[in-house]
Image 1 (tube, helix red, strand yellow):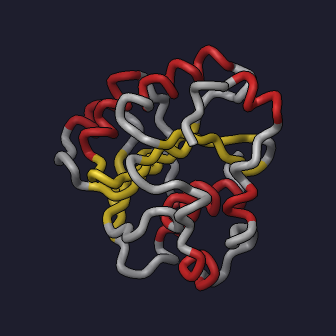
Image 2 (cartoon, helix red, strand yellow):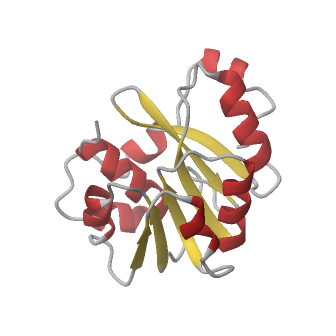
Image 3 (spheres, helix red, strand yellow):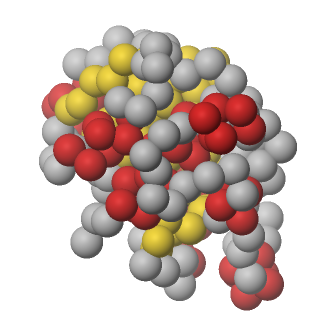
Length: 181
């Protein structure tokens, strides 16, 4: 179930990490809640495509600052995300539960070919998403004034943002050498 916490965390975490997000892509078959959150950011344009490979193939190279994906991601999908992201782009993607170490490790190993930083973060209801970034670190590079200036949020704020990346020792141990922070 997508709730306000999920939508706010999936959108504001990457948009308050990227230095100057202008072009956002949402890959989803149910994007209304995500779109509503993107619209809270000024000077941002947002494209939405359905979660299928054909739609992804049609997109221009280096067109997006941020991709927010609810599409199952295999190596081919991740290669397309890399292709459409700008040099300092960020991907936020849903993934298998953290206790599915094999599936997530495979995804993170592919992402490691394209990005400097790969970190899971809490998105509510015990779920996590992955943030993969070519340039910006989600806790070191948070744009505090942007995070603090957003109106009408129920959950996300500049304190929740870095706290969402805190993971227990069990996760750190399970993903040692795979998570890149």
